[in-house]
Amino acid sequence: MFTGVASRTPVFLIAAVVGAGCTHLSPVAAPVVVKRAQLHMGTLVSITAVASTSDRANGAINAGFAEIKRLEQLLSTWIPESELSSVNASAGKAPVHVSPETVAVVRRSLQVAEMTGGAFNIAIGPAVDAWNVIEVQRIPPNDELEALKARISLGGVHLDEQARTIYLERAGMRIDVGGIGKGYAADQAVATMEKAGAIAGVVALSGDIKAFGQLPGGKKFPVGIQHPRREGEVLLFIDLQDEAISTAGDYERYFDHEGVRYHHILDPATLQPARGCQSVSVIAKDGVWADGLDTGIFVMGPARGMELVERLDDVEAVIVDHEGHVHISSGLVHRVRFPNEPDEKGRPQ
Ligand code: AMP
Ligand code: MG
Image (cartoon, rainbow, N blue to C red; front, side, top):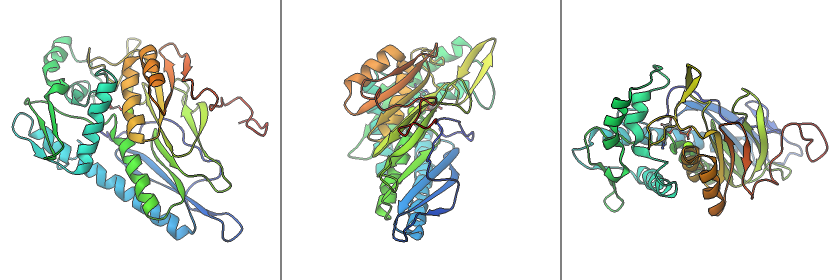
């Protein structure tokens, strides 16, 4: 998970916050907004905190970054000493004792797998390695992919919550939480920031964004969803408060070969890049659900994916299908703004 390549998922926009440093909003007692960015989990992480003083806001931001760094040490399969790397190294040999956080991510991953009928599958690791679409642009031959199928069965992932162990029953199995870990990290960072005294804020790990509270003046946090085919352009805007948005797109990591786009979200049924969508953005209360579901729904495709969204409480989605048509879930249609629409004060956006 977490490659060293920064993806360019949704643009995160906060009108009131420009660049790093702090903005003192008068009068003197008014809350302060501070925004800073660092590289973690192979991507640009930006954190905004609203607090009573700039010291407190900076303290909350420091706590948020520290939490993300701590989780990366547990969950990244790019770090050989991480807990998940140990789980993978012990595949077919022995269960590995892990922290409550690793248990939580894997438990949620298995739940999302069930909700999406197996479209979301953290055992996909060996196939992700076979494609390795960033480091070398290769198309694995069919027989190579066929041979991997026995190793990507979720039935071979044994999570014992009481004992806090994870066991992969076959040698060569590998779990990869790249499709859900950033959303989980955003949730945990927000909880840490609240404990550190932030009144409100946003944690954005590239396209996995969680917002809590409101900006000074009572505004929600505006977020732009990246247009999947027009780099740097916003498809639509949405305001967030106490919720998360996560986007999975075929434009994040890909290469083109003979007119076909090969990207990093694989369909577990075929082990080929999933073909139904250009991008899927999911809004949910928690980042872990939003992130797991964006990947799973991307694989399910627009029709089955939207059916699932409509069945779930507190989950909304914007799906751009493979032809570029935009599908918006029923609970979201009245909340989105398109870039060429005037804002609520009649100004162009
Ligand atoms: P996201 O950007 O959230 O869609 O996550 C994409 C990442 O999830 C990929 O880079 C892989 O590490 C992993 N992944 C790819 N396909 C799947 C899948 N079908 N289920 C779960 N994780 C996947
Ligand atoms: Mg995801």
